[in-house]
Amino acid sequence: MREVKVSREIVEEQLRIAEEYREKSPKGRKFFMECYGCQQNEADSERMSGICELMGYEKTDDKTEASLIIINTCAIREHAELKALSNTGQLKRLKEKDPSLLIGICGCMAQEKHRRDQLKKSYPYVDFLLGTDMIHMLPSVVERAAYGKKRVWAVNDLPHNELGVIAEGLPVKRESKVSGWVSVMYGCNNFCSYCIVPYVRGRERSRNEEDVIREFRELLSSGVKDITLLGQNVNSYRSENGVDFPTLLEHITALEGDFRVRFMTSHPKDCTKRLAETFKNEKMANHFHLPFQSGSSRILELMNRRYDKEKYLEKAMMLKETIPNVALTTDIIIGFPTETEKDFLDTVDVVKKVGFDMSYIFLYSPRVGTRAAVMDDQIPHEVKVERFKYLSNIQNEIARANNERLVGTVQRVLVDGVENGIYTGRSGQNKIVNFSGEGISVGDFCNVEVTEAQAYSILGKKIN
Ligand code: SAH
Ligand code: SF4
Ligand code: F3S
View 1: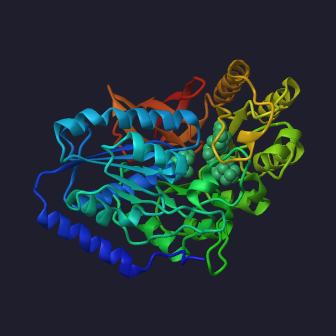
View 2: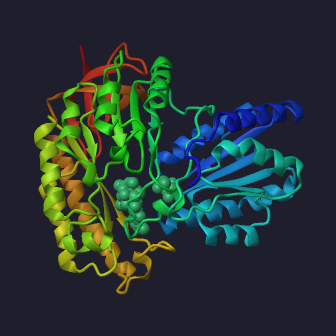
View 3: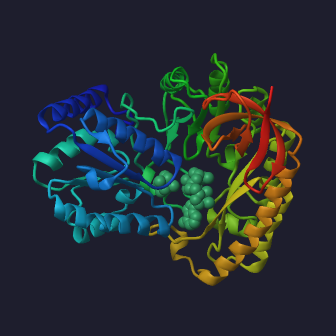
């Protein structure tokens, strides 16, 4: 087994290479970063942006003026991969115009063998590939791609029993001054039969509590007030010295300051009463995202989710009873192999019984190497789309009804923007709130009385 933690010496050497690169390379160069996928990938992009700046590149949103382009890819569904590939294809023209342009592909798609082969063969203008476990190696990879005149393929194959790494001490360029995230664990051990994540992100591993708390404090002192703890199975967090996820939350909410904590994503198997009780602390935002994927116990078994319909409903009800005014959101997969009309109606039933504030509904997409991809009885696309539309309509009505019940209440909103005199922000329930008022600045918490409801946003006015 490899060492999980990347040694300090390796990280420091990479940071030294970054600085040397900055000194020896022409000034005024820019980098462009494109990111697909989940917040974990966004967090990785922020680290890579931090490294690019250290290497002397300035961030640009215009790829035509960039001398380094990085595409951080996602492999969760075919659509995400095809989009990244098509955008990569469009870079060919830029490379022809400027052969010194460096193009790199990283993220989860770079972890897949068949995609790597495809990139190597059909995309000769891609200069480097960087695996999800190699982010800390970006300086030497870019350096070799720029000066070595050779393509650099820096990817670890992650066989099932391998761990993946944790690299501390990398620079970060954060996108928002109001909200931010801290990865607390990486990888996944669950092997849901449809999912590519365990293959591309390696085994579960948790950061030390001190490292998490240090980063959390840094965010607080930079003025960030809404912080999401991240992990593919965030509530499976367990530090080497035995700190579990509820304890981590207790320690974090005990920190000084006016801030809000969230976390993403939870697996129902680790969704306990003790976790729900941490929400007694007012710094915990009253929102809980708990994917259920399917309401059919038969499909859940095929998915290897380790709970059935009843167990999920029990957990959802426990959350509602324990956390006052909790907003529940979820992920759902439509059209898993063998899904019948009856299975689908069980999914509809769970949506109605729980009354989610939002459901992210996905059409099942077969992923190379996963068990479900080779199951018999794949569902035709048209059937998936039909079920998707039916369920979306129901979910939209529920979301609207939930928001209508908020009219007249007061919500504490963290302001994240303003346009034409209308402020926008997020409530504890993570709802988008548009409101009017005086003496408001981005980054403030405001009390807002809700005056009107829409399915996925609410309107209001600031009160004192
Ligand atoms: N670790 C998180 C999220 C994983 S990916 C969790 O376990 O909840 C986010 C969502 O993508 C999943 O919850 C699932 O609903 C969806 N998803 C994963 N694989 C998929 C596939 N092959 N096809 C369609 N949707 C998928
Ligand atoms: Fe994928 Fe399941 Fe792991 Fe979530 S818990 S990342 S859906 S394998
Ligand atoms: Fe996509 Fe990788 Fe996240 S596959 S959803 S970017 S972990």
